[in-house]
View (cartoon, rainbow over the protein chains, first blue to last red):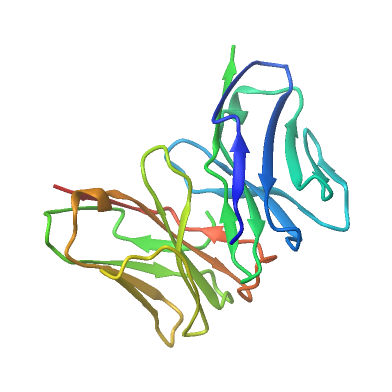
Length: 111
Length: 114
């Protein structure tokens, strides 16, 4: 089945700097790659997604890039702010039409 | 607020007991998913229902079962509880249950097994 690896597990960046979180997957048939953000004590929420026919997608300070050949995709957050502190999960669709989540990255924005 | 509701918010029980977690999807959503999130763990997919029928199964233990009712609300039943079942249980819903649907998560039920 699909295997999703997410790195790093913890990331600390200075406020204003950029943060990058990377995920790799195993099944070349995967076509949909969402990212969810979970603030402390809250529910996960979709922040951006990308489909396999697109290499990059941007929404204000957040962007996602996809390399289908290498089977990896990344979340980029620019000009980080305190409210970006959260756990971020990548996810991938599998052949059974399920979404498989990575183990998450805890992002700390340092003042 | 995602529109997905879960009850109860917290549940404390003893080993060996049985509990039922309840989820109501967003209005118009036909599919419901259940996830388990343990401390410092990701979201482990348990099971998915679509319009009352089981659609996909993940790493759900045999001690756990679920169903989706005609009014589309869903219940997750956990029996013979063990200490390791302590976790946050999330329900999510989506419109049609395909993988490319956005999943909207409920606030979760925190289960503590003592």
